[in-house]
Amino acid sequence: MRSEVRVDDLNDPISHYTDAVRFGDLLFVSGCGPVDSNLNLIGEDDVAAQTRQVLTNMEKVLSAAGATFADVLKVVVYLTDVDDREKINPVRTEFFGQSRPASTLIGVQALAIPGMKVEIDAVVGIPND
Image (cartoon, rainbow, N blue to C red; front, side):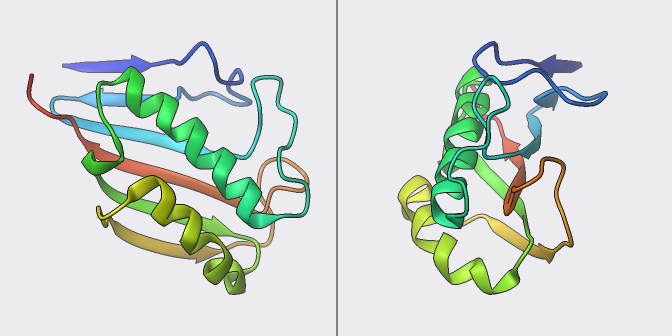
């Protein structure tokens, strides 16, 4: 019933994890960062550009599992500056559209890769085929 999801187009995990784990009709997406497949930071000091890359990476994971942003039930957003919330909200709307997941915002001192300003993980309900 448990299966791991790895997306070839994403960077190799930097620790002992996989891109997502499916358990029944639920998908647990690991924290997505603003990096390309070679672990290069995308967006430099622009939190909106970083968020766009984060959600682009998440979209790849969702697609690999047969889901879309409309299926996302909950996200946890980690920001190194919680005041950046207003800068990332328009980007979230671009990807989620009218769909509004439950959401938690956590301010952190630092993230896994130097320069990262944002990371997002998610819980997703997989649609029945």
